[in-house]
Amino acid sequence: MKEVEFAQRLKGAGARVFLVGGWVRDYVRGVEPHDKDYMVTGITEETFTELLPEAVKVGKSFPVYLVEIDGVNSEVAFARKEKKTGSGYCGFAVDYDSSVTVEEDLYRRDTTMNSLAMELPQGNIIDLYGGIDDVHQRRIRAVSAHFCEDPVRALRAARQAAEFDFTISEETYDLMRACRDELQAEPAERLLAELRRALQTPKPSRYFRCLAQAGLLPVTFPELAALIGKTQPAAFHPEGDAFEHTMLVLDTVAEATDSVLARFVGLVHDLGKGLTPKAMEPHHYGHEKRGLEVLKAWNARMTLPRDWLQGGLFIIAQHMRAPRLTKPAKIVDLLLAVEKSCLTWAEFKAVIRADHHSLPHYLEKAEQIVCQLKAIRGKDCPAEITGPRVGEWIRNQQVLLYRNIVIDSDCAD
Image (cartoon, rainbow, N blue to C red; front, side, top):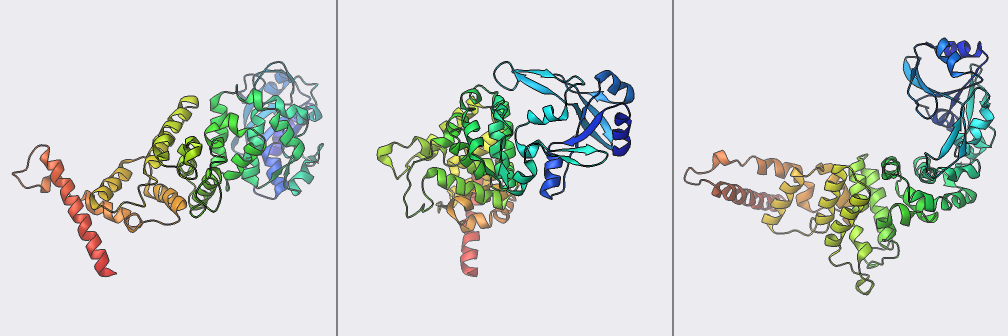
């Protein structure tokens, strides 16, 4: 059915219908909105289902229905108010009867820009808490002290600061700090979901900087918090400590690729520096080996996607070696190892380039070189060579081929 018909059918039964959430926020921001979410007030669930028998209920804790509107299955939720009864996002008593008003529903929401509603069918915007002004001021501000009742709202505020390039108000930072203790008990899946979304933002470093400013980085991502204050040789790292370097690499990778995997492995490439003994600083000898253990511990605490873990371990082990290799045999081995890894060449090179500001010649031409290396096969091996020696012959031929490629390249130069 059309949106107008949907709204008028419910309004005819005494209900009010609103667009809420991100669609209204983006409409006010002047960007193309997506994914409409609807909210209804002044109607019982029984009456709603009588008017819309095709609606499919999907909400468990409170009524949420899927209704096809303008050809799209859209969520329609009943207005609700909540009372904190325990810890975490499940610790709420929810009231969603027909007496709950739009004002009560919007008051329970996290930030002012997310507490906007557009009433249908007339299209007037309800702005009870200054959300429109905050959007225009590019500011994230909590609606009320209820913000910290769901501690993951603190992560969401940091993520939206990175997503929209907004600042977070000081009073909201105070509420984020109040989430610290309860945040430590949140399911890892919720933290991981926000991390994934943060890595998709244009400048993901802002997410981690906001968490650090709120004092939440040590309880959410202690592996990154450990990098703060870890000094580095100023001649090579004028940007500052290991945390600053990591943030710079992360944003540089984000500028080069939309790949979440590449951004994550860029984020974790120097984790081992967080365990460097103070007496060794500003040098970080052996941080690659330490970094492998740090990432494994992170995975034990918060099960990471398999490709994030595998890709991260690979980058940690190789990010210092890759630009420094000169021996043909080692270069061939690395090229073939990258080819077998979960990383694409674009992802691998984006991280190495961001970390070292350039690529060695063999990585610039990696795809072409690997194509030639893979063309050497066992079927081309002399008949007298059999068994395990076939593999040795293939590798020797690949190394010889690479040497010839280098000679030809030098001659061309």
